[in-house]
Length: 192
Image 1 (cartoon, helix red, strand yellow):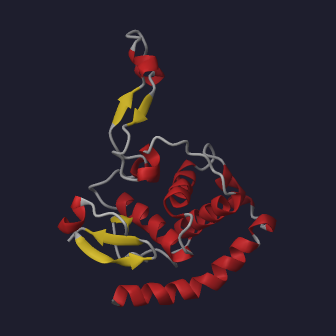
Image 2 (cartoon, one colour):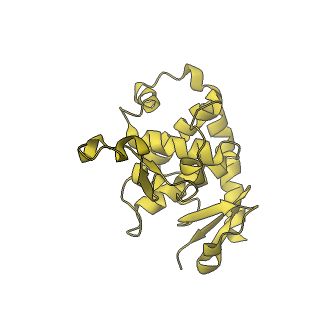
């Protein structure tokens, strides 16, 4: 309950600032922020923005920040990879049939894909095209990714959560770790 109250107060505090920031996003001229738009220039920010967009674009701001916070908590936890992109893309992979049939290909020329429905974040291996369709939501996801990495204001919103799931599913792992609380349609957990 304490977590939910803290989240509600925090969400109310950031709503005005972030909404104003997001609404002026199209006219925002910070060149550092513009670099977020390419995977090549800022891959870690891009991966984090992708995860926010595909996991929580329809969530309120607090929910989007919470999803980002979980990724960063995993990066800082030795049980997970130590980069944002590796955390977001974590899961088993298989080699594409296009390269598997060529025994003479070098390892870096081979193509690998995530195994469907086996990734840490469902959007990454759901078999659907990862196409950005909502430019405003994508821009907001990029702003949130930038802000959570460059300010400490929203870090810790999940109180150390490393897991979450939508409230309409009941994964087996949920009973094995500690419930932290919920924000909108996501329920958050951490290791005991």
